[in-house]
Image (cartoon, rainbow, N blue to C red; front, side):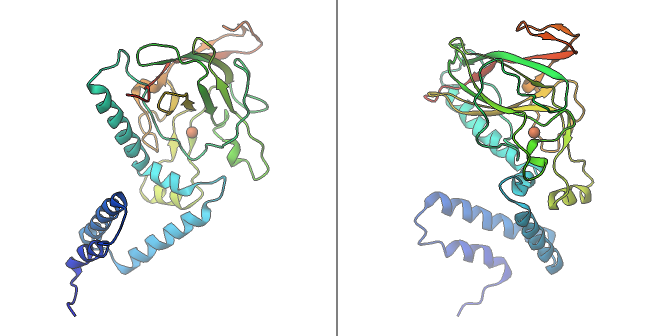
Length: 298
Ligand SMILES: [Fe+2]
């Protein structure tokens, strides 16, 4: 029997996939095996470090449940999520090259670990603040395609942490949904709703990923942002954020998600009549942002 040497192992694993019936899986697994072996060789991984890695991944898995996703956090904080987002967006840009759109599509960013399926469907203009802390903010704008044509009945999912930087998902097993909703744009593609001006916050750092960040000498903070997900028939789904323009950590987002085009001025206003006619008894902010979706055919 031919004995395998250390440097032959990666190729031997790849060769064992000769009967694999899934070409894409074969491609991905071959590259994964090749790079993991190259990594192990490059850092000359010790048995203690290898076991430490296994214990770290085990702890990350045990941390996960329907409300906590430690692996999304790991992917986000290592910049992998944004790399995947960037690859997908670059594909879209390449497809548009032959027929450049009039308007640039809105840039995408990470989904993050705090999306919670099943947010309430509300009427345009609703206030989703409830009992949550934070300065009120009025969000409004238009959803169009890249030719400037309004996208009516576009589903707009929005979610954020509160004024202290905490999401509902972080507030215990029985905590109800807060600061999230689904809206639908009107016939002119317009949307509007009230929420709060989101605060910067640390990603959950009480688990293995938090420990990793500390050992790497990194802070866990993200600049304040409103998550949005837009879905409309005939258009590519868009997952993105609106970042608060004067928030700390815009230059060092723990998950590398900031895009300059997504930084929005949250205009401060004194108490008084808001743009939608509502009379505010306390100061508030107005955030205006127009989204541009890529038609699916492109
Ligand atoms: Fe977030």
